[in-house]
Image (tube, rainbow, N blue to C red; front, side, top):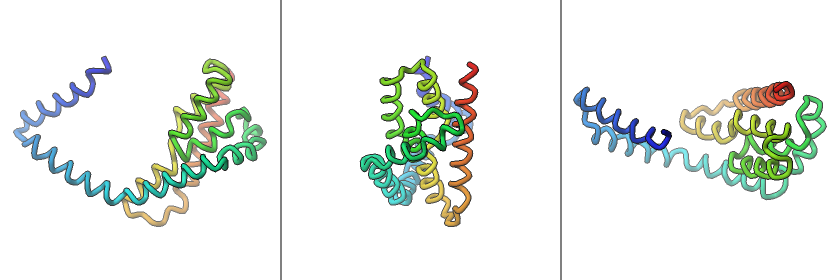
Length: 168
């Protein structure tokens, strides 16, 4: 069924444009030209965040920070084996996916640790990447509370998710 979702949405858009007597091709090309401008405006922000993420992961800083923060996370009931994932997830989706794969291969996907890792990966977002894209598009420069609040909420979700998994 999922193979048909995109073609169905595409056909519905065409039918809708025919019913409303709109130029679907013209609207598409106009939107595509605006997308090119958007890419040109946000590319420097994306490049800077991607380079920083790669340096953070490749240097071993993510793993070291995960080891350093293990006691803090353990205090909140999060297994110490997930500390690297907790540190990498707000920074890099691809890096977090790699850490998730290592956790699955070492502990199994059906273990408590594997389930916690799944909840952490699946219910959180790459906060810094989203902030870079959003703030570059909206020209907001005073972001003093946005990222800390997003990280705090993300952490609260980690704690609640691991807590609930103890009972299910």
